[in-house]
Length: 300
Image (cartoon, rainbow, N blue to C red):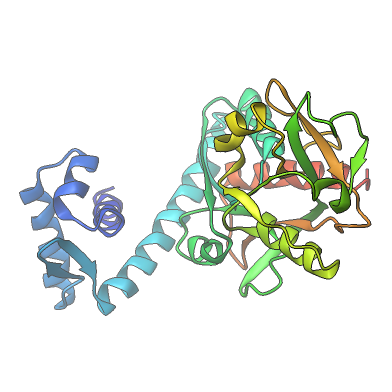
């Protein structure tokens, strides 16, 4: 559909911030892409982008047009998914975002399980800052998101809630490695590795302040980047997951639950934009996650 193609082109320009870079991504010449853009701007008698020396930036008119374009593309994807579903093809695309700082093996398993059932469905999964999730949903860039304590976010609907388990991660030879649970008192003698930002960091900081502990990290980074440090020192890092009650850790490391008396487990919410009709693929994936969340919560 030519109209939909034009919408995708303009969306690509907005995402790339450059006509040239968007043209490379969309496999079209920059001059042809620019002609498409100029034709739309002529039709609306308003520039959709401000031309800058370093690229382009959405104008006020462009922001309005792009919001409309993304709704149109999402609606078309939903209709296409429904038609394919009627034909038995089970095709579609699901865009999912989750809170940075979390280790989401549970979602990885869910994606794998869903694709085993429906191999023609594609996925885009992205870690993102909690504060950007609402805008990503509103812009139709993602269909669903997993967010810790999203009460402050507006215009979203919560589909399911599950408690998170928070773990201390350390080398298997660490002096604490044989414990069933660990407390903040256990951790204090050892160097700590904390995520630089995100919900897990906030949860740890709040819990520590309640007990007048000062969690001073020797290293701030995401957990996968700390594996070498953990394997070759007595440092301790942290992870949060809904996948299992006993988290899986990389080879040579162990994950031990933090004492819930020290840190009350936060809750993860599965959310979507309020009032949005999801595609068949995204809707069915959401239904599967709702069932999984219920199992994690002990409801089924």
